[in-house]
Image 1 (cartoon, one colour):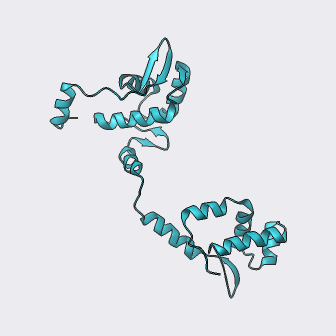
Image 2 (cartoon, helix red, strand yellow):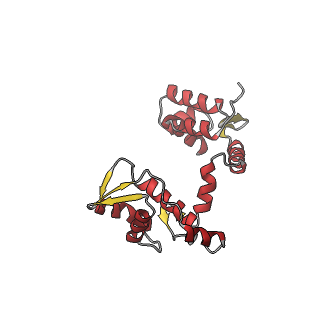
Image 3 (cartoon, rainbow, N blue to C red):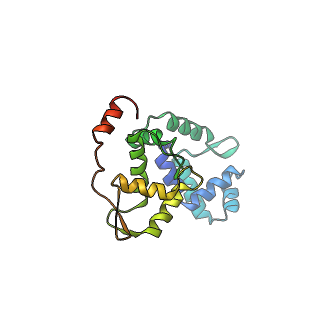
Length: 198
């Protein structure tokens, strides 16, 4: 039987099944025959053989003179291909641009350039607040504190910037995410940008 092409998606689907993961682990730890796989995995013979059949069908497990083994070469090749593939996700480019400022769900610092600062604020607002929901100030502060842990900016400053940018609205101690686009730069801001001073 010719193995099907292994892709990152098929690999994830394949290993999302606990029985298959147990069989793969048993083989990786040295179980090189179906009988040893059954014993090492703790599965019934029928379940282990079905999982083994699926793993070999996808080319993740192969049989050679030494018996069953994990196809590490296939995994290395898949890893190289995945790393070399260009990102088809346009958000990936935005993520790279924001990486100096946002990392692992944390705000490291605010960019000096206004458009980048606005992009950072949009990311924080979009990740922290649902458009149709209302929040009291304590909840807003709790959500923003998570972004500010170990960073240079405190949550109160972030909250103020979100309100000033029109991304978070406030009335009578209640906050909500704004669906409207943020205000456009005024003449002075446009002049500073045109002069390259932002």
